[in-house]
Amino acid sequence: MFTNEYLNSLFETTKERNGSQPEYLQAVEEFFEAMSFIVENDPNIQKFGIMERIIEPERIVKFRVTWIDDQGKVNVNRGYRVQFNSAIGPYKGGLRFHPSVNESILKFLGFEQTFKNALTGLPMGGGKGGSDFNPRGKSDAEIMRFCQNFMLELYRHLGADTDVPAGDIGVGFREIGYLYGMYKKIRNESTGVLTGKGLTYGGSLGRKEATGHGLLYFVREMLKVYRNDTIEGKKVIISGSGKVGMHAALKAQEMGAKVIALSDINGFVHDDNGLDLNIVKMLTEKNPEFSTEYLQYRPSATYDSNPSNIWTVPCDIALPCATQNELPLEAAQALVENGCFLVAEGANMPTTIEATKYLQHADILFAPGKAANAGGVAVSGLEMTQNAMHIPWTYDEVDEKLQDIMAQIFNKAYTEARKYTDHRNLVVGANIAGFMRVYHAMMDQGIV
Ligand code: NDP
Ligand code: 2IT
Image (cartoon, rainbow, N blue to C red; front, side, top):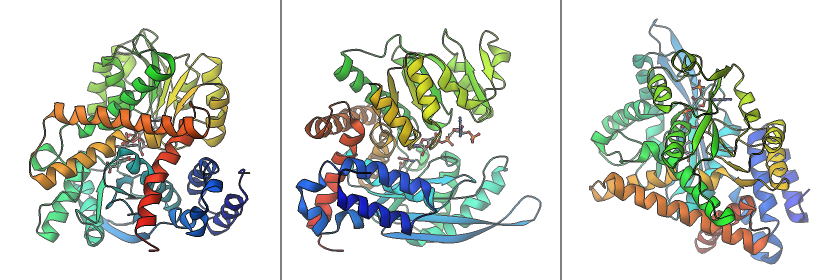
């Protein structure tokens, strides 16, 4: 499977030990493919068990969360924190509240986060957590009670220099506020133990937009370096109109692109002349599922109730920003057939391995999430810095740093890609660049 025997045998063992965790195995497979380019030339990787250690979370905490709904009924959910790797800094990564959450999904996310955080150049290790709690349709009071009970368990594993969670799917300002309020009450301390906080109590300007904006800054570098081109006038389609997708859309428009299709869980809307993002924004602020209502305001658009069909819309650039494995092989084939020339992942692992390979073989420019969506965690790192200094930066200061970090991430991935394989292979480049930093830190710190 891989060109290296040692990686083949280790992957077999990993499959045996984690047979029921497909997302985690998928993330390891993509990583091992990239590692095939370097393990043979560096015997220390094998001798010091670097691969064996780096694919194994340092710690997984799993706990019961009990909460009472508005009808007085007692509910039980599962809470998790996967503390994946702390070689370069405190564990750092989001919390996801979604019914699909399980150990496989959180392990894949924590694993990817380790390399993503390394790519930012900031001192952050990798972690991820969350719950199978479904926030959809819950009242504010229910969300608050759930968050408080979740934190009643999680707090003992956190700390500004130990583990610093943030948001992810289903966790935004509101949830971070409730989680933070409970942490502060239990610990009696105001440290930056969560990022993505509200601006009145230690949050950073620019954090809510950071992943989407960072994604567009990354795309800007790709277009410049590979095509001597800009995004101006390009037709862009975006899946997911949540925190990442919405800000990616707004930034793409600001940079002169035309956002022609956008999806949510109920379908997607398409208008070849460009969607009216003010209407989308107004609708999503009331109700995250905007797609069914958009046509009432802009009847020139079309609506399709299957969100996966968005990939059949002819476009120049596709930005998957919803969830893992949302872009399978058939979608990649449709994109190529319809003239798309660039795919950049705003979500984590939205493209399946087969689809990624298909796009790369078809010479489509492809940006992996661990590089292209690192802007969110990068600004989380900047939020930690501001909290530690007790001084906030302006929006422009944060944005300038974000632009610089995204350009540097592109350069690191591009440089490694050029060194080891095709200069367009940013999957290999990003994995190697992220890995190298974690690897060297692990070597320096001995066998722990
Ligand atoms: P949100 O919960 O804010 O938004 C996700 C959106 O995607 C929701 O509107 C959801 O709808 C929708 N969605 C889910 N499945 C589909 C689907 N199959 N087709 C279309 N839409 C769908 O999450 P985020 O925006 O924060 O996260 C999105 C992705 O980006 C995730 O992969 C996350 O891990 C990644 N990411 C997030 C970062 C962050 O800082 N927030 C940073 C880096 C990556 P519904 O709510 O109805 O289910
Ligand atoms: O996937 C991600 O990078 C995030 N959800 C953001 C993590 C963070 O700590 O800001």
